[in-house]
Length: 343
Image (cartoon, rainbow, N blue to C red; front, side, top):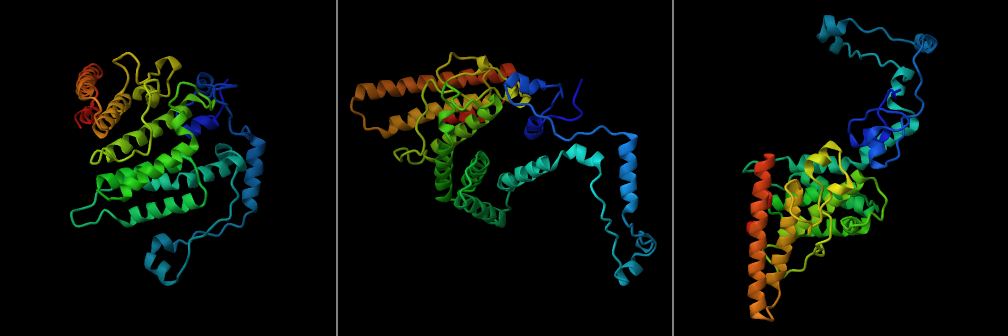
């Protein structure tokens, strides 16, 4: 027996749901709480009759034929199209769920408004005569600060901040880009995202939520090191990850919603050919952090300093070779990963 609609969790993640009862396959595999929309009522003749009677009780205004016959007369007479005051029928509300589900959808929309605006912003390309400090950019920055001042602390706010920082980096809006990366790092630390790349899952979150948090934190680590390339001695906003920290999951598994604990790799894991582009980028970022630390430190022992530089060089070239092998094997592109190794 299957449920008539997708479960709430699959709706939220916009993923496919097999509608199995009492628990769908996705929630069963990942240990999530599976809930289906409440208030679902089977359609029958009696309910249809009640709905029809309720509709007949509504005073229907006749549609003005002049709207189609002569638009000029319709406009000159300042006529208006009828606005029927129909109640939402049961066969429609069944799809939307009850009042609680509707409120949840509205809350989700408003919680994601800034994220949607920042996604639109980063996809905009100004012409040569246009300033990158567009009205959309100013609106996104202003809304970010207002949400921050209102005490909003959520992963959606951090994700929006990352998009804004990327936009500022791409258009050389300094020092705003530097400040934005630091702000994202502070928000992420406050949410505990820096702890999610550790081995233990202390939060007890489902794997997809936990993976999302890990990927957000790795994005901040990448931006923090990239923005400091021009001034390596400048202190980073984030600490360097350790060799035992977990890398982002393989992109194909993440996008398909299929992942197991055995598929997770750490920075120090043995080299594999199925790690994915984001994981390779994270590996390159870890090595970039080691290079930044190396060139920033005052050499106390010249021999050790030269030896460490040679070891970093060998490791970087090994990662380049491994990335190229995975790219050929899986028909992937590793441009950003390779570029990070050559920085």
